[in-house]
Image (cartoon, rainbow, N blue to C red; front, side):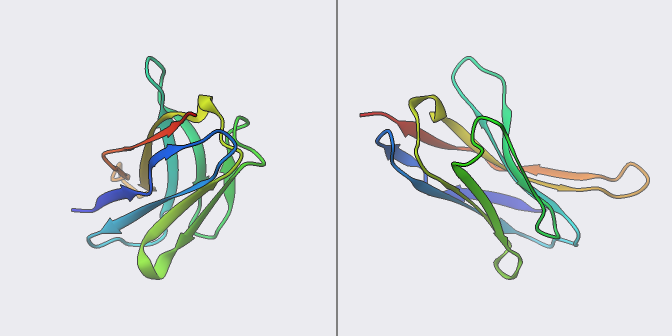
Amino acid sequence: QVQLVESGGGLVQPGGSLRLSCAASGSIVSPYEMGWYRQASGKQRELVARITSGGGTNYADSVKGRATISRDNAKNTVYLQMSSLKPEDTAVYYCNLYSRRPFGRDLEIWGQGILVTVSS
């Protein structure tokens, strides 16, 4: 079974930066997409960024220009670099892995989440 473990969260001042990492363990068959989602208190989980196996990216409007998602397939790791952080970026961030497969056998795995707090 594939497991995702996030790291790099914590307390950051407004305007600051951080980098989240998500390492996947277990056997993974390419191609697969990975992404970052977040859920603020009292809010729905929302997409932050995602990256395809080929390196194509997509970002939520709220983080465009401030976030960069990347992946290192050799290390089975995806990263989220964020800058110019705002208090509204405070949330639990979740790593996601998705692999579309035939016959209803799509694979989707979620990490347990890591807290990012943007505050003075």
